[in-house]
Image (cartoon, rainbow, N blue to C red):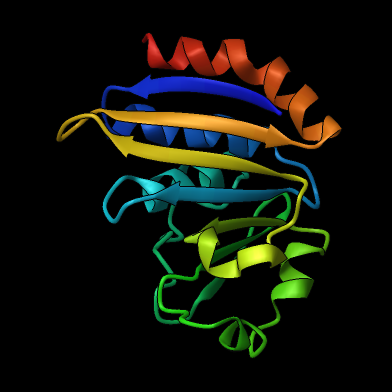
Length: 163
């Protein structure tokens, strides 16, 4: 596992970090966003969408009640918010396998709700409050392809936090 820990000083920086990752994602990527309510997961997902060229006029919001939102960009983006799921049986009512193992990119908020169904090859992105504005963002890549890509991207991501 390759890990990179960053400090984002504000929402603008977090959005830029997400966009940079969105520029680099590939078909089949799964990004699991971990963190408390309000820690910046949906904002980061918005950045990923913009980096994937989802048009700026398309609102990127948390699919808390719909559970899965789809967006068209250079690849299809699936944004999942599993917060409301209470059992794995509820997950089975959704087309989650097609979303996660398909040709698009899956961004999952509250991935812990998937239990052991969360794919082994993925990016874990963890958000922690440092204060009202600053966040600690830790990226961990699982899988050889994912680790190599995050290692190549590390310098650019670090530079964004220093602007």
